[in-house]
Image (tube, rainbow, N blue to C red; front, side):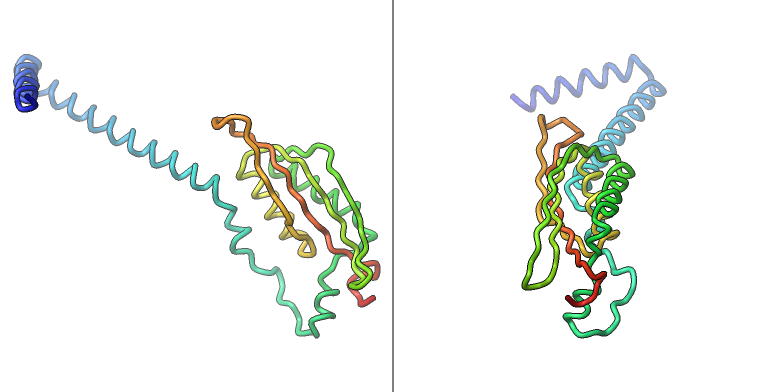
Length: 186
């Protein structure tokens, strides 16, 4: 049965080619080849964009320290890398600027400061509700980590209303490790 169907299709194709002529057939063949190529390229670009959206930015994965860390005892190196508590508001303002620069909306967040007496370190925790594309939110997080090496990205979660939405809602929890003495031992 399948051979009969293929034979009928081949016969119809030959009759059409005979009536249309060689130039029209060549044009149709080129059109079909171009359409197939365009479809293949478009599907590859969609797959690449989807894969890139799911991957963290390269800066987050392969970020190298800006300057070599001088040789120091581990405890001194730890405290030297901390931020200063007196600049906490400026550091939050820096995060606002990074969010704006990367096209991320930031509504009201929750902030909590605690003190770890054993380590002599202030923990400034920020719980941030963000809106933007997956890639923009990842770029914001990478930029935050690079501009504040004393910060940690503790948690990140994404929520999308529908599968086709480009804009997602994210909840990001950052902790800034700060000291009162500007990087000196307590």
